[in-house]
Amino acid sequence: MVSIRALDESIFEGYRQLRLRALKEEPTAFTSSWREEVEKSEKAWRERLDSHLFRMFCAVSKGHVLGMSGCRFEAKEKKRHKATLIAVYVEPECRGQGLARKLVEKVLLAAFEDPRIKAINLSVTSDNVPAIGLYKGMGFEKWGEEPQAIRVNNTYYAKTCMGLSVENWKNQFFHKIV
Image 1 (cartoon, rainbow, N blue to C red):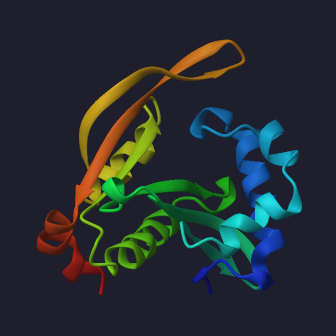
Image 2: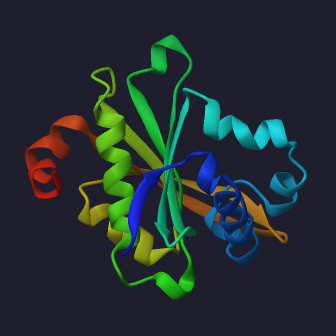
């Protein structure tokens, strides 16, 4: 049985290993690089565990972390009404079971619990058709595209920018997941 849990000390090392695997195996899916993350200090890694600006969730089965997703809240006063969906990843051998959707749903529930949050944005590599389909199916709408958003091995990739308002989520999707 798979549970979706908030990142805590008991699964922290599994989360770290999954994140490094994701960055290494799918470098175009993330803005962070494997090299940057592997060189981070223990303190920097634990920031996602301890910071009020991050909420991370993991799909866990028998102590093994199978997937992750999170959100980053804004520190600046003028931007505190929105959050950013980050780090959505499920191990390739566990895909097709709805885990990514369950992870994103958990993030949305947690983020929209805060009455200040009026929208959640994300960026996704524009050629990642399955991820874009997932987000569209959850009510996210495309509002732009950033050409040459990331460079991996001297190749540039565009990012599709999408957003979900709290009103749209509550009206169309909230009742389906609670």
